[in-house]
Amino acid sequence: MHRRRWLGVMAAAACGWACPAAATPGGPPLRIGLAPYLPAPRLMLLFRPLREHLEAQLARAVQFYTARDFRQLAADTRARVFDAAMLPAHLAALAMSDWGYLPLSGTLAHTQVILLVRKDSPVQTAQDLRGQAIGTLDPLSLVAAVALRWLTEQGLALGTGAQAVRVAVQPTVSSALHALARGEVAAVAVAEAQLHNLSADTPIDHRRLVELRDIPGPVFVASPTLPDVQRLALVRALLSFQPDPAAALTAANTRHHALEPTALANLQAYVQVARRLMSEPTGTAR
Image 1: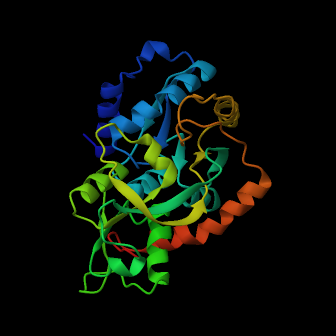
Image 2: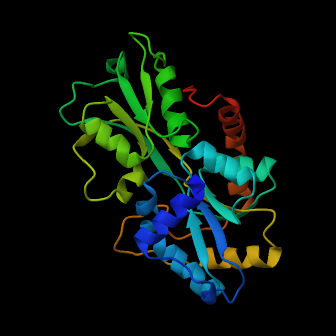
């Protein structure tokens, strides 16, 4: 079974959202891709309230999927595998600029990129990371791109040399924090909002080394193959979602906002970042 479909089915079974064909009066299920920053079952659990809201508003089944990494997510988006997708801001900008996608809604207005180290770590500055490893998501992720650029701006080389910082790619934020707790990496790069999505068994024995720049939260975009009537209905449904006020604000639990011309113009600044990252070979860390 294809990896993408397997992830969707596995997460559906774990979270109890298998959608029977009889429950699809509005047509075939709407397929939406999600950025793979957490393990698939956890991701589907967190987005379950949004999925159920969309199903109620659209009167049709909605299926959420993810991918093994950000590069596969980008490939699936470009191939129009999904009717819509929640993408990191730079990939959403690229999808709208180069792949014909249309804006649906924004999630978090912004979130901060931070570097974490263990509470008992001797690392106090970026220079203390020489010769050590940093855990990041796929280098195609916006968080990783921001963090790795900052390290080079501090005069650090990325690579495998004795004085270089080795980039240890982690499949999810959760696995990155486990690697930090085990001492396999000296630091991890995450978005602050991602820390609110962790499962209870994720280690939290860390402190902030440095707070980097703010980045826009993920953006929902629609495939050019989605009919206009369905796209506009999806926009209305997304904008009417009410987050849980008792829970932390995250991409899964936030009011959606319309992407006004100014916001869309600001996203254009990320197109070149995405194009550069997409052009680099798999495994490239810069």
